[in-house]
Length: 125
Image 1 (cartoon, rainbow, N blue to C red):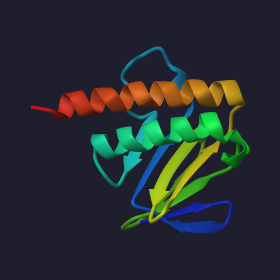
Image 2: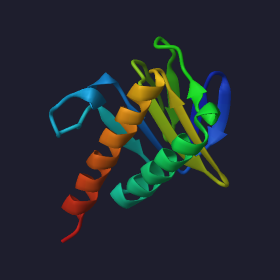
Image 3: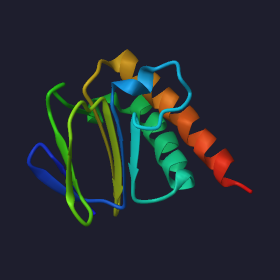
Image 4: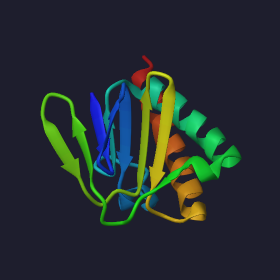
């Protein structure tokens, strides 16, 4: 799968995008969080890694403009607007991009972690 961000193309295994709905008090983030690639466990692991990396190296986070769009090519090309947060993982790299300030990014990662945890719990028989 390919992630196209700021004119650069990344070969990725998994992508998670969030819009402003990630900040909603409703625990059901369906529509606010889109997952491309793998399952809830992979998303949870990626979010945990992103949270740790963001705490240690916030300067490595890509800053997006609120109007920037992201494209994801799997079988077809999907262009996503209203991006708050993008997480992606490829062969040997992780990517975190945000269009909100540092405190809001931290909050979005925390909320995404809770959402991914719920996904895993629902997935377990």
